[in-house]
Image (cartoon, rainbow, N blue to C red; front, side, top):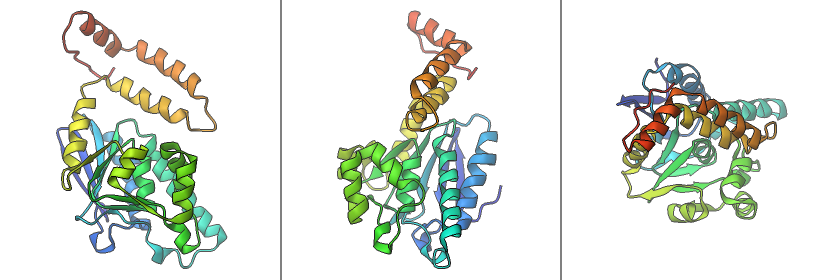
Length: 260
């Protein structure tokens, strides 16, 4: 498929999606959102042997430095609400994707960029990464899930401080607060994400999908996470992968998962 603002590479079942607008610090415009929607809704699900997806930004300065504010100037209440809902829906595609999605944050992840990183399942930060939701500087609030996911990761008290002050977190503070999983030297973000993805790929594929579903259910108001876990546990127990995994454990060998 052709993309306006994404570079797509694949190696051994791991797809790297690079937000490719370095002239604009990889800011999220309408075209980039369309590209992300197409990739996660149409392209990625059809890729045979897909292990997972890594999202990063082009260049050394920014993962995604925010939304494209030039597109905001003509917004009114109705169109702003539509834009926010579209962004949330596309980020939910990422959060609910059946394979792991890891953000390799190689610079500024601000506003919509921080929201994109938080929609991914895991986050690897380079030592130069910076995170923040500076929307109040413009007289608005986060519109793509930032006010909700930031609380999930770092708690209400610190999330409110960051949302109200527009302060940024450096990589080490993001790690300490639980926003990111690992901090690595600059330039090693994708390599670390690949290492983790390869490790996850040795596990049962159906189980990985169900873990994602069950964890997400904890935070969805229309679902009861414990019920989701019960259903997912039952479904995984009925797979050939579970029988293979349990047999391999008892036989003290590595499992040969088939994804069924």
